[in-house]
Length: 288
Image (cartoon, rainbow, N blue to C red; front, side, top):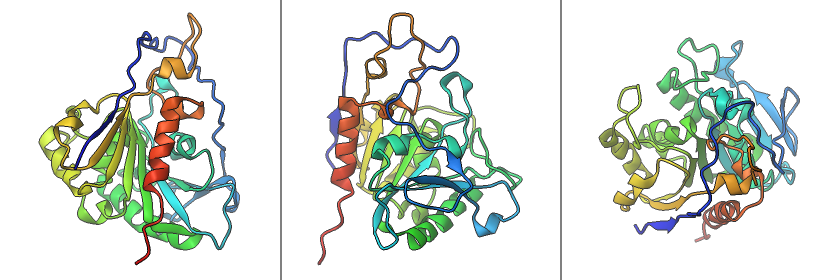
């Protein structure tokens, strides 16, 4: 497979590290999750039947153009670790990347949990019970598609930071979960970009997982993706480097952490490229 490099390199200075309250002015505003019934334009809390009586949940957003008889591609998102410096709570309800990628239109968007080891809550830092997290996804993606008109042939993995690493560590953990995805979109980090403090985070193990993508498209945005250029046969990679400081038009002395899942909430050439990638790869498969 060929590898596409859409490296957006600019001469702008790197954004300042966060030295105070997180500031991220955005044009889009992610809808707050509620406990209401699912409806077009609404983000709601859902508890899978297997976790009734616990605090484990996922967030379901139906696009503003959703109708009960429609068929829609699906974005399945995993959040970053709890990291107050960049505004990340680690909670499924506070995901942003998938909403920025779609603008709230045309795609069902689901923010999935990492199931804690006690099986009673969502984990906000690292993996919790990895196998339970994988199993949750394998059960609930088909269930959500069946209930709300998701097209099982057009499901995309999406993740920021810990969620970007989860593309491989969770989303390609075995052949069954890997078969769910039409493609993947990640921002900042990638499985195998470095060794982390958990088992099998090394490059060799990550490449075994990545091989399960089997040539499908992956848009890898932000930092920690350069090593992918060495493995063009594993997937059709597009590498994107959004200039976060320019996107947010940070004034002199302004504060924003460069590690953020909100960068696509503002108009920019980088967002245009990401959305064009998604549009291209989410077209329905030709009928035979």
